[in-house]
Amino acid sequence: MYYINVSIHDVTPAFEEEIKHLVKACESLGISTGTLLVIPNFHNKCRVDKYGRFVNWLKQQSQNGWELAMHGFTHAEDIVKPKNIFEYFISNFYTNREGEFYLLSEEEAKNRITDGIELLKKSGLHVNGFVAPAWLLSDGAKKALYDFQFKYTTTLRGIHDLEKKKFYKVPVITFSSRSAVRAVVSCAFAKLMSLLVSKKPALRLALHPLDARNVDLMQVLKRICKRELSYRQSVTLDKMVNILRNL
Ligand SMILES: [Zn+2]
Image 1 (tube, rainbow, N blue to C red):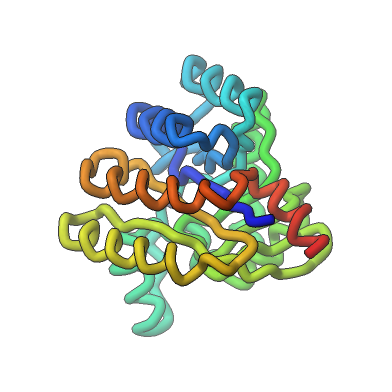
Image 2 (cartoon, rainbow, N blue to C red; image 1 turned 90 degrees about the vertical axis):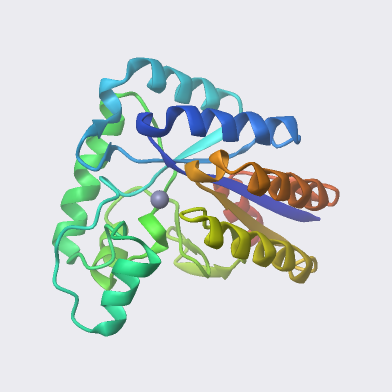
């Protein structure tokens, strides 16, 4: 059997319209289960617990088959001086300074995760896993995750099973819609990836709010989903971890 997890990143009331559009688009393609990556306090300006209507919508989605995971705390990288040119490049070009957990110490990471869990708990939201913004985790942040009840975390390369302390390599198809050029290039890359990963038992598809605003990208996404769903079953990350444990 082959599986796919669709994760919608950057779930916050600040992107309510785009997130709902993506969930609807997924459901119209037959994807009724996946993972919503919730940011507890987007850019320190949008606390999820202050938006009752959005919280109720999230609870409804989790009853309908969408699992919730925590996606950073603010999703914004603080001004930490990068140690080298590589870190500078990752912070400024790869993530547009959104790699919140990329340069954090273990203690700083612990504090942010604790604050995030508290806000989610206040809202009555339960999360199974933690996914760092842009999948970037410092060594300290990686260690910090083991102090919490998360079942998994994911990176660009795959899924870390935090309970079994195992790593599963699982490819991910994603788009970059920050500019028109990036969107065109990433659509071509996504189509190619979809062909290259056809023999892999598990695949991830990561969507972002800005994807919903690009009509051409949404068409490519629909074609990719139709192809993948012709032989893959959509699952939550939680379920994907259970499957990977037994492969
Ligand atoms: Zn994100």
